[in-house]
Image 1 (cartoon, rainbow, N blue to C red):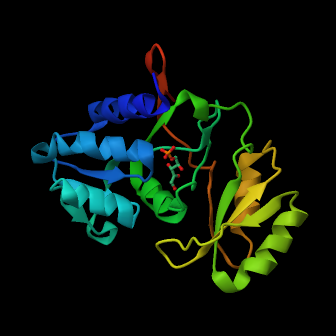
Image 2 (image 1 turned 90 degrees about the vertical axis):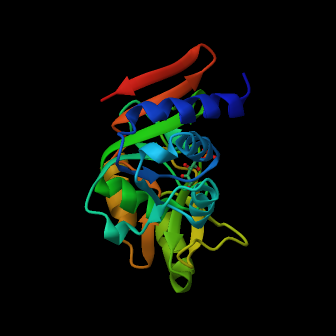
Length: 219
Ligand SMILES: O=C(CO)[C@H](O)[C@H](O)COP(=O)(O)O
Protein backbone atom coordinates (compact mmCIF):
# COMPACT_ATOMS: atom_id res chain seq x y z
CA UNK A 1 0.00 0.00 0.00
CA UNK A 2 1.20 3.53 -0.67
CA UNK A 3 1.51 6.07 2.11
CA UNK A 4 -1.53 7.89 0.74
CA UNK A 5 -3.58 4.67 0.80
CA UNK A 6 -2.64 4.20 4.46
CA UNK A 7 -3.70 7.80 5.15
CA UNK A 8 -7.00 7.21 3.36
CA UNK A 9 -7.64 4.03 5.35
CA UNK A 10 -7.28 5.82 8.70
CA UNK A 11 -9.24 8.84 7.48
CA UNK A 12 -12.22 6.64 6.70
CA UNK A 13 -11.75 4.49 9.82
CA UNK A 14 -12.24 7.62 11.96
CA UNK A 15 -15.90 7.79 10.85
CA UNK A 16 -16.59 5.16 13.50
CA UNK A 17 -16.05 7.84 16.19
CA UNK A 18 -18.45 10.39 14.69
CA UNK A 19 -21.70 10.61 16.60
CA UNK A 20 -24.85 11.44 14.60
CA UNK A 21 -26.22 14.96 15.04
CA UNK A 22 -22.96 16.43 16.37
CA UNK A 23 -20.44 19.04 15.29
CA UNK A 24 -17.07 17.47 14.52
CA UNK A 25 -13.64 19.04 15.10
CA UNK A 26 -11.58 18.71 11.93
CA UNK A 27 -7.80 18.96 11.49
CA UNK A 28 -5.52 19.91 8.63
CA UNK A 29 -3.23 18.07 6.22
CA UNK A 30 -3.36 15.24 3.70
CA UNK A 31 -4.62 12.65 6.22
CA UNK A 32 -7.27 15.02 7.59
CA UNK A 33 -8.32 15.69 3.97
CA UNK A 34 -9.24 12.01 3.63
CA UNK A 35 -11.26 12.28 6.83
CA UNK A 36 -13.08 15.31 5.42
CA UNK A 37 -13.93 13.31 2.28
CA UNK A 38 -15.24 10.51 4.49
CA UNK A 39 -17.28 13.02 6.49
CA UNK A 40 -18.81 14.18 3.20
CA UNK A 41 -20.30 10.72 2.76
CA UNK A 42 -22.32 11.13 6.00
CA UNK A 43 -22.91 14.88 5.81
CA UNK A 44 -26.68 14.54 6.32
CA UNK A 45 -26.09 12.70 9.60
CA UNK A 46 -23.98 15.42 11.25
CA UNK A 47 -24.73 19.02 12.19
CA UNK A 48 -21.45 20.29 10.78
CA UNK A 49 -17.79 20.88 11.58
CA UNK A 50 -15.35 23.24 13.26
CA UNK A 51 -12.25 23.65 11.13
CA UNK A 52 -8.58 24.20 12.01
CA UNK A 53 -7.53 25.97 8.79
CA UNK A 54 -8.72 27.90 5.78
CA UNK A 55 -7.75 24.91 3.59
CA UNK A 56 -9.88 22.46 5.59
CA UNK A 57 -12.74 24.97 5.70
CA UNK A 58 -12.69 25.22 1.90
CA UNK A 59 -12.71 21.43 1.52
CA UNK A 60 -15.53 21.00 4.04
CA UNK A 61 -17.64 23.67 2.31
CA UNK A 62 -16.98 22.20 -1.13
CA UNK A 63 -18.59 18.98 0.12
CA UNK A 64 -21.61 20.85 1.50
CA UNK A 65 -20.65 20.49 5.17
CA UNK A 66 -21.58 23.49 7.32
CA UNK A 67 -18.59 25.07 9.09
CA UNK A 68 -19.20 26.68 12.48
CA UNK A 69 -17.13 29.34 14.23
CA UNK A 70 -15.63 27.74 17.36
CA UNK A 71 -17.14 30.58 19.42
CA UNK A 72 -20.62 29.34 18.50
CA UNK A 73 -19.91 25.87 19.87
CA UNK A 74 -20.01 24.91 23.56
CA UNK A 75 -18.57 21.42 23.26
CA UNK A 76 -17.11 18.97 20.78
CA UNK A 77 -17.11 15.23 21.36
CA UNK A 78 -14.21 14.59 18.98
CA UNK A 79 -11.35 16.28 17.16
CA UNK A 80 -9.82 14.27 14.31
CA UNK A 81 -6.39 15.20 12.96
CA UNK A 82 -3.11 13.85 11.63
CA UNK A 83 0.35 14.20 13.16
CA UNK A 84 3.94 14.54 12.05
CA UNK A 85 5.13 12.26 14.83
CA UNK A 86 3.41 10.31 17.62
CA UNK A 87 5.15 8.52 20.50
CA UNK A 88 3.95 5.58 22.65
CA UNK A 89 2.60 8.06 25.25
CA UNK A 90 0.32 9.47 22.49
CA UNK A 91 2.19 12.80 22.53
CA UNK A 92 2.66 14.37 19.12
CA UNK A 93 4.55 16.83 16.98
CA UNK A 94 2.14 18.72 14.74
CA UNK A 95 2.26 21.80 12.54
CA UNK A 96 3.90 20.51 9.38
CA UNK A 97 0.97 22.19 7.63
CA UNK A 98 1.37 25.38 9.71
CA UNK A 99 -2.06 25.04 11.32
CA UNK A 100 -0.81 24.17 14.81
CA UNK A 101 -2.41 27.01 16.76
CA UNK A 102 -5.96 26.48 15.57
CA UNK A 103 -5.40 22.73 15.88
CA UNK A 104 -4.36 23.08 19.51
CA UNK A 105 -7.31 25.31 20.33
CA UNK A 106 -9.87 22.94 18.87
CA UNK A 107 -8.14 19.92 20.42
CA UNK A 108 -8.44 21.64 23.82
CA UNK A 109 -12.20 21.99 23.39
CA UNK A 110 -12.80 18.41 22.28
CA UNK A 111 -13.51 15.54 24.67
CA UNK A 112 -11.46 13.12 22.55
CA UNK A 113 -8.51 13.67 20.21
CA UNK A 114 -8.50 10.99 17.51
CA UNK A 115 -5.08 10.95 15.83
CA UNK A 116 -5.05 9.48 12.33
CA UNK A 117 -1.63 8.65 10.91
CA UNK A 118 0.25 6.23 8.73
CA UNK A 119 2.80 4.06 10.50
CA UNK A 120 5.76 6.21 9.36
CA UNK A 121 4.65 8.76 11.99
CA UNK A 122 5.24 6.41 14.94
CA UNK A 123 8.45 7.14 16.86
CA UNK A 124 9.88 6.20 20.25
CA UNK A 125 11.26 9.70 20.93
CA UNK A 126 9.82 12.89 19.42
CA UNK A 127 12.10 15.34 17.63
CA UNK A 128 13.40 13.89 14.40
CA UNK A 129 10.70 15.87 12.61
CA UNK A 130 11.61 19.56 13.05
CA UNK A 131 9.38 21.04 15.74
CA UNK A 132 7.19 23.86 14.35
CA UNK A 133 6.75 26.98 16.48
CA UNK A 134 4.32 29.75 15.46
CA UNK A 135 5.81 33.15 16.28
CA UNK A 136 4.67 36.79 16.08
CA UNK A 137 6.78 38.20 13.18
CA UNK A 138 8.57 40.90 15.22
CA UNK A 139 9.75 38.30 17.75
CA UNK A 140 11.34 35.97 15.16
CA UNK A 141 15.02 36.69 15.91
CA UNK A 142 14.55 36.85 19.70
CA UNK A 143 12.61 33.57 19.81
CA UNK A 144 15.17 31.92 17.53
CA UNK A 145 17.97 32.89 19.95
CA UNK A 146 15.99 31.49 22.90
CA UNK A 147 15.34 28.23 21.03
CA UNK A 148 19.09 27.84 20.48
CA UNK A 149 19.54 28.16 24.29
CA UNK A 150 17.07 25.27 24.63
CA UNK A 151 19.31 23.12 22.41
CA UNK A 152 17.52 23.50 19.08
CA UNK A 153 18.51 24.77 15.65
CA UNK A 154 15.62 26.96 14.47
CA UNK A 155 15.03 27.47 10.76
CA UNK A 156 12.72 30.16 9.42
CA UNK A 157 10.07 28.56 7.18
CA UNK A 158 10.44 30.75 4.09
CA UNK A 159 7.39 32.15 2.30
CA UNK A 160 4.92 30.80 4.86
CA UNK A 161 2.47 32.89 6.86
CA UNK A 162 -0.01 31.08 9.08
CA UNK A 163 -3.76 31.66 8.83
CA UNK A 164 -3.21 33.98 11.83
CA UNK A 165 -0.60 36.09 10.00
CA UNK A 166 2.41 34.76 11.90
CA UNK A 167 5.64 33.03 10.90
CA UNK A 168 6.90 29.49 11.62
CA UNK A 169 10.28 28.48 13.03
CA UNK A 170 11.06 24.78 12.50
CA UNK A 171 13.37 23.58 15.25
CA UNK A 172 15.88 20.91 14.26
CA UNK A 173 18.29 18.89 16.37
CA UNK A 174 15.91 18.07 19.21
CA UNK A 175 15.63 14.78 21.02
CA UNK A 176 12.58 15.47 23.13
CA UNK A 177 12.96 13.38 26.26
CA UNK A 178 10.66 15.57 28.40
CA UNK A 179 7.88 16.70 26.07
CA UNK A 180 5.66 18.36 28.69
CA UNK A 181 8.52 20.42 30.13
CA UNK A 182 9.68 21.52 26.66
CA UNK A 183 6.13 22.41 25.61
CA UNK A 184 5.80 24.65 28.69
CA UNK A 185 9.25 26.23 28.22
CA UNK A 186 8.66 27.15 24.56
CA UNK A 187 5.12 28.36 25.14
CA UNK A 188 6.44 30.66 27.88
CA UNK A 189 8.74 32.60 25.50
CA UNK A 190 7.37 36.07 24.72
CA UNK A 191 6.39 36.16 21.04
CA UNK A 192 5.59 32.48 20.79
CA UNK A 193 1.97 31.90 19.84
CA UNK A 194 2.06 28.09 20.02
CA UNK A 195 4.54 25.25 19.89
CA UNK A 196 3.56 22.24 17.82
CA UNK A 197 4.28 19.88 20.68
CA UNK A 198 1.01 18.29 21.81
CA UNK A 199 2.31 16.79 25.04
CA UNK A 200 0.22 17.87 28.03
CA UNK A 201 -2.84 17.20 25.88
CA UNK A 202 -1.98 14.30 23.61
CA UNK A 203 -4.23 11.98 21.64
CA UNK A 204 -6.83 9.77 23.30
CA UNK A 205 -7.11 7.35 20.40
CA UNK A 206 -4.62 6.72 17.58
CA UNK A 207 -5.66 5.03 14.35
CA UNK A 208 -2.44 3.88 12.69
CA UNK A 209 -2.41 2.82 9.05
CA UNK A 210 -0.28 -0.29 8.51
CA UNK A 211 0.15 -2.71 5.62
CA UNK A 212 -1.94 -5.25 7.54
CA UNK A 213 -4.77 -2.84 8.33
CA UNK A 214 -5.73 -0.03 10.69
CA UNK A 215 -4.36 -0.51 14.20
CA UNK A 216 -6.27 1.17 17.06
CA UNK A 217 -4.44 2.41 20.15
CA UNK A 218 -6.90 3.49 22.84
CA UNK A 219 -5.65 5.23 25.99
O1 LIG B 1 -0.21 19.18 11.96
C1 LIG B 1 -0.60 19.14 10.81
C2 LIG B 1 -0.90 20.36 10.04
O2 LIG B 1 -0.54 21.52 10.73
C3 LIG B 1 -0.80 17.83 10.15
O3 LIG B 1 -1.68 17.07 10.91
C4 LIG B 1 0.51 17.12 10.04
O4 LIG B 1 1.46 17.95 9.38
C5 LIG B 1 0.38 15.79 9.28
O5 LIG B 1 0.13 16.06 7.94
P1 LIG B 1 -0.20 14.93 6.89
O6 LIG B 1 -1.50 14.31 7.29
O7 LIG B 1 -0.30 15.67 5.59
O8 LIG B 1 0.93 13.94 6.89
